[in-house]
Image (cartoon, rainbow, N blue to C red; front, side, top):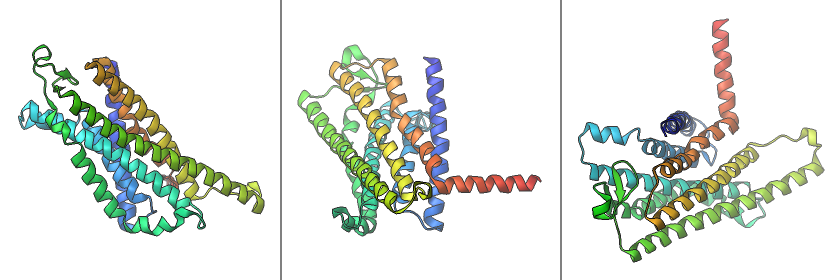
Amino acid sequence: MSSFKNVFYFQAGLGILANMFLLFFYTFIILGHKPRPTDLISCQLTFIHIIMVLIGGDILFTDLFELLNIENDFKCKTIFYISRVMRGLSICTTCLLSVFQAVTISPNTSFLAKFKQKLKKYMVYVFLCIWSFNLSFSTNRIFYVGGFINVSENNQMQVTKSCSLLPMNTIIRALIFTISTSRDVFLVGVMLTTSVYMVITMFRHQRQCKYLYSISNLRESPEKRATKTILLLVSFFVIMYWVDFIISFTSDMLWMYDPVILTFQKFLMYAYPTITPLVQISSDNRIIIMLKNMQSKRYRSFV
């Protein structure tokens, strides 16, 4: 278990460093240069992932609450609430990124073409709606999470060393589960639909280009690279989501959390915010060019 925790903390550290680098890069691009349409969405997703990793790795809030001597019950409610909000924001923002990219690469003759300018224009309002929805949607965690006292006496389900889920009415639990699952299934469905659309659009475009240019002269456009990156991220997110969903659903039905399974679930859940920035860094040509320029300048300074 201790070795697994070391791997988990390494994952958290790597995720924070990669996401911080991306956050500074996107902020620099948005404020000082001509950003791509998806940069603002990617910047928000990066910020969300930083908070997710900090909370998931018990890096920020646990030590802060202990330093301020804040009671355990308030600490558990805060951590679980923010964790659920960030999880909801992550799936919503990933879905938005997928939809926006599908609209961006759609041909001018398609139905989606008329939404290209509208999405850019109303992007800030979309962000406000996403944040407002998730902040209000996750409030149930405030009422049904508390500090761990005694499982045998209070029928609590211990989910961490010091926090537990409080017992709730069966109807309320079923209602919360139905609403949250319906939201997630809908968003995952939208992501899969837009992913299939992007694959079809890319295939048609590549087939048309073969008639106009030789294969050797074909160069991959930034839009195509971005589309491939988003498709990879969406595929990975969907896999991680369903594994997390199966573990959470089984634990809720049995009303029992095994410590090993919980640690494994946390590792899977925070694999996405750790791997996402690494994929984005390796696939964004602007970052690669910037790093190469920095390396060449450093090399010339030593010569």
